[in-house]
Image (cartoon, rainbow, N blue to C red; front, top):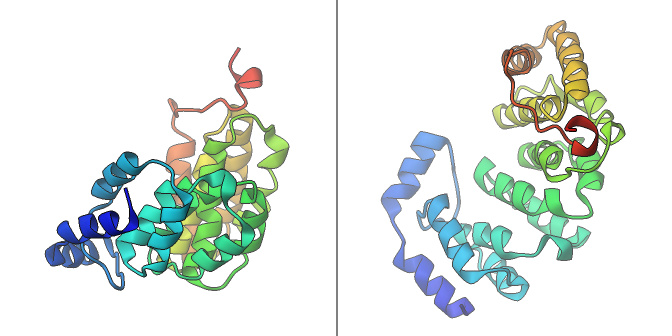
Length: 232
């Protein structure tokens, strides 16, 4: 599919009512949006396949949905630090942030580097991107041992007092995903969560209580990564 054909297809699906609905229902405030649901963009991306050149053209169009489509058709192995920095600075809501962070950044060779760097950032969706990568990397990397993931706990504790809704939700998400990676990380995640619970920050208390509700379930579903160790 060419750039022209893709843009024409996006405009054919344009629905201003969906722009309003997404903002009201999901808090997705976006500029230059056509009003296309994420599920529809996933179908288009599947039809296109991986195409880096088209992805870059779509991002530079400035159309909101075209940028999300970019995140779905660019090859993770070809991501560069310069592209990541260019893209992360444009994130204006959780939808586009998570689409890039989960599907692209967490699968790139720079995932760990950006977790360490972006979780310190001040802009809300740049920081969220760091924690979304963290949450996704726990599932994307099926082979690494616990030494890769244990250093995430101090980062979570450090940022658990951020009251901004899309940051604290991502911090909580990362904590829960680490705790569901295997039984040993689950135990450590629960201990860290109990430590977070002792703080006076409303955000930290919410993060901890919500995480414990899942991490302490009797029948919590574990990924058992790496399975060479945890699933024999």
